[in-house]
Length: 280
Image (cartoon, rainbow, N blue to C red):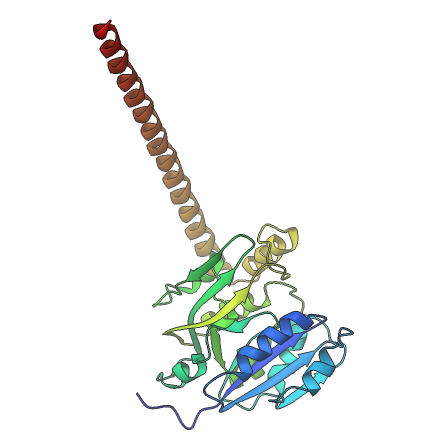
């Protein structure tokens, strides 16, 4: 399939006092084999040399600013407000495109969805995990047990400009936004491209068990229409029950295997003793 020549992607990068992260991200963006994209950088007024680094890049951002902002989602909204591409991809400092051909692969796709998403790789404290995104978006309730990596997403710019991230959320504004888009019947389109490597080691949302994360997830539930909230809670309860049942079954299987191994060892030891006594 030929490249969609009438399309341009805007890549928005936000950063704050993360010189190591912005260097990695900038390298992955600058080295893309497909260069027909727009790059926007919003720096929250870093004091670690970020501005000097941006000034000396061989491929300058099409727009960048270094000034205080209201946090992650305020910075993303600011960056998106300057975007002129058909789709926008948010690639935060520390996150990278998976390889140098990502945008070339994306341009070869027939992008029609309001929200286009691909696969991603996540780096956690002890491992690197390749994540397969759902080929078919299961339902609206998908976003109450899961999320899509926003670095692996390309969202229509007009959609994001008309409905920016809710900055009263500190961690889950992206999840809340996808819930809203699903409720508005926006179309989600999967593309079989591994888009990014997401650094989930030190980010604000890296701990899913934090009190802030839990409270914001609970808030998204409360802000749902009452009928949908009831259905979502019932579906979540059913899934939790199934997980507990599967977990119990797994424990039983493990115990059965353990007992079988112990019995086999005992049997083997008994045969060994019988053999020894016969020899004597």
